[in-house]
Image (cartoon, rainbow, N blue to C red; front, top):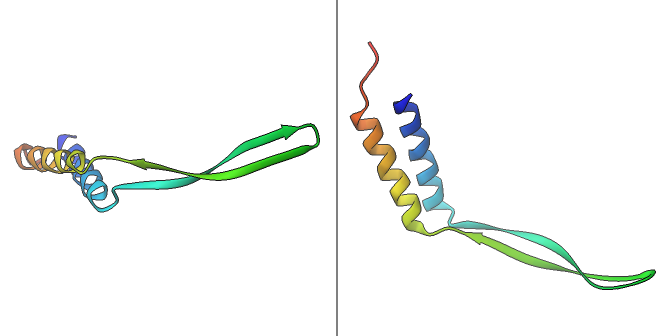
Length: 71
């Protein structure tokens, strides 16, 4: 179990270092006056710090290295 958790952390940490975030489009209503509606598309972004990916990657490596092999 610990070895699997370590491998998962390594993969997530590496992915977080490669992709530092993502953007998405959100519709927002500007005017809503009866039958007339005006909306605009706004781009929102979600970013995470690179040190978080490094911490996950190193933590996963430590878990994999220190875990015991199954016989």
